Image 1 (tube, rainbow, N blue to C red):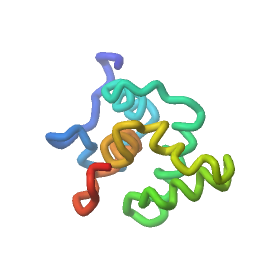
Image 2: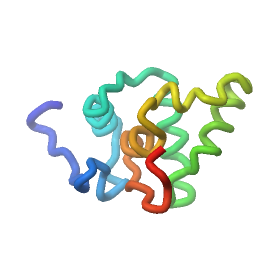
Image 3: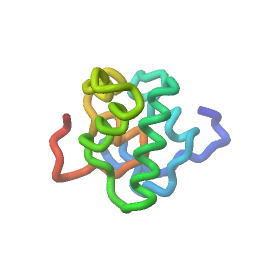
Image 4: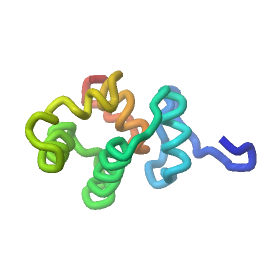
Amino acid sequence: MDATIQFPPVDAEGYLIEPMDWNEEVALELARQENIELTDDHWDVLRFMRDYYAEHQIAVDVRHVIKHLAEKHGPESRNMVFDLFPYGYVKQACKIAGMKRPRAWSTG
């Protein structure tokens, strides 16, 4: 990441403290830290998550992301979110999308 860009504050686990600090540059850096190269499908999921957050002020449950992907890619895409984010929805997708770590969820 460009040294002139101030990265927003994160908690001890690397999640943004304030989800509104998120932007695509932040997502790229968080993805780099997770060793994920963002594809169009990753961006689709991240934008879906951000839109949901903007509307509801909470992180979207993985079930809704799976449904979104199935509507776009068909029922065979059931596990696509886990292919895109192999170390887990909360650990990678929520983090890269700029969500606070959902405390009540498992790390899956």
